[in-house]
Length: 127
Image 1 (tube, rainbow, N blue to C red):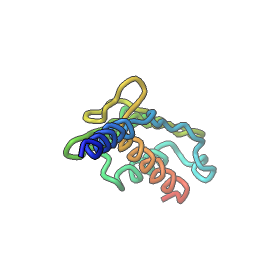
Image 2: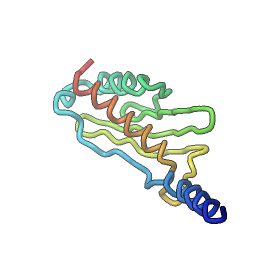
Image 3: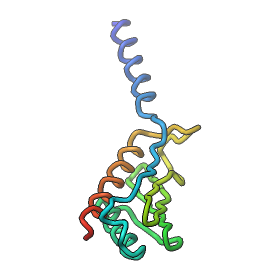
Image 4: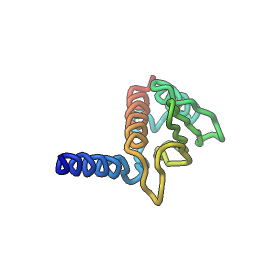
């Protein structure tokens, strides 16, 4: 019985460590098909991609958006910066994500990877 309790404790502790990963930031070239679009169109496509998974987006300036994702226990805020050549998505703030010294809950990275994929799909398609 003691051995089973120790195994459960070890699994529980390793599960906590498993949830933290290095913060995932995006710095990628824009898809070639989007590089000739006006910045306002690129911005609209980025917003449409973000809204696909319920990110709330606000404009800071042309080429700079802030996107926020929330669920019952966690929230994440990212900066989305772009021009005709490059897209950058970087960590800004979070709650309930265990952010500490460049590490964060794995859900954050999943959210950002999905955000990146949705934005990239919109930019590649141009609609």
